[in-house]
Length: 361
Image (cartoon, rainbow, N blue to C red; front, side):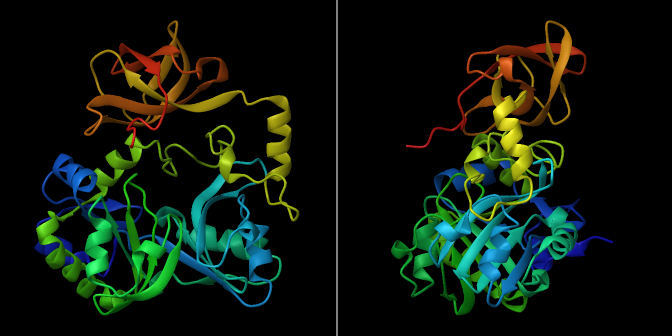
């Protein structure tokens, strides 16, 4: 039976269509995916992301322990700063992609993907040299408040000065009377916050945000809008665009890999070798120039021969074009390169474009 977040009943009262996602009973949409997508782009949307996992490292040596596990460099961060990073296997492929929060050198919190909660914790326990991880996944609910009106909405419910929290920074304080970690992060390409709170207070916080946000045009948003929003930004989804068989360099995520980090990290040697030899395939963003919508798993052909496959695809509600991502040989990865996407036996022409698909001013 699928697990339920503390907001499950709230979603059902709002008439959400629920689906099984990574073993969780989650809302895919409330009204329509396009309406929820547009609310996030133009106003503010609320997402329940309580299915995500949290793993904590506490005590002397926590920073050093974590830094040997992740591809990015937490030692270069200040307290109150977060980084996007990879947990990589020995081949440089992804165990998971994560966000790491540095409270202090002795307190580090890691947010992991819902589908990987148990796997990541076991992997960290196996590979941690020094401080051992603690699974905090059941101690937090998480609500993402995303959109241009998100900062104003959250600010009206808190005494925390949000103007002092920059992108990928966070603070602790009360929102609507609920103790929260207030993190200026998200998965939509819009400004906003991810609020980590105690599970028993999640519904109070959710209802306060919905009530206070009425004047802003707030909408609850489901997994459908979350997927179209992140695709327009070319944000990778674990299990689709990144996995254990594709490396960080192939995924275009070299910027989260710090090969010069003194303590190194798992997967470093493989990435150093791959960088020296040259990457043979790359994750690209493309638009269809023919009719159709690219979907995960569709084959990519060049001159009638299969050369890759679509990892994510949708009709972008904001860009109003059929867009997708996929791995192709490096020689087809340059902007302007063309190939065909096989849509139910029909070759539909596509062109590689500069990403993100949605250009933000």
